[in-house]
Image (cartoon, rainbow, N blue to C red):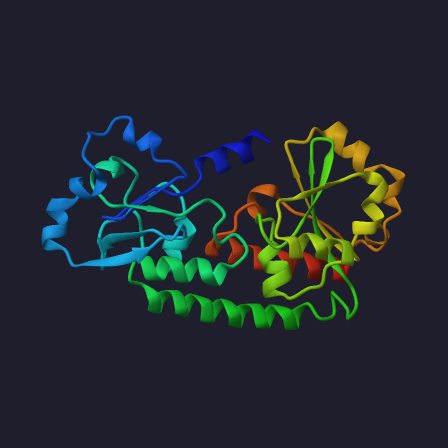
Length: 283
């Protein structure tokens, strides 16, 4: 769980663009900074740069460059590259730019809102809409490809084994949730649908109730799990008797490929999910 805690504590990206995006608190930035506010520090640039008002997810408004030319970021790389923006680094952001707060997980279940927010922030609305258009077309094509792999009435679920604990995931928190439930429009089992609708973090379940949450097709990742724990869980009679196991509909996915939920990651996950479904169908 340490990796999850680290990312959540980090909270947000830091983007100095002459726009800086910081985490949930600015304490780490302020430690080595002067007593000047970010706006005061950026004043020389504002004198010669056209500014605009940007409303952050927390409701506060800030003045930022209308067309930022140099962007510094330590997160949100996928969002930036998707709209044609290449960040230059992460050094000295607190001293050169206004600060925009984007809490971790703000758009973790809506890729369109995610990329549109960055398009608005960086004056790249046209690029954002172009990415959405091509992604929607790709998703529509993918839905056609998998029709024979996932038949009408069949359900799909997302799961993760962490050490000796088993979790069910919805369409947020990565793991391909946006791809499986939003882009491909696949259907979760009723018990999993409750997790999806609740829009909550991964739900811990016991082996005893696993059959209630099991889908006809199960996408599974593992995180920080010893081989002996994998063998114990996946060798358990409850798991081995699941219909998905018997029908070769267990799709073991690589955690590092499925963890993220930025536009580039989701586009890549779409390819991976389709490949897995079609490959298992052919066996």
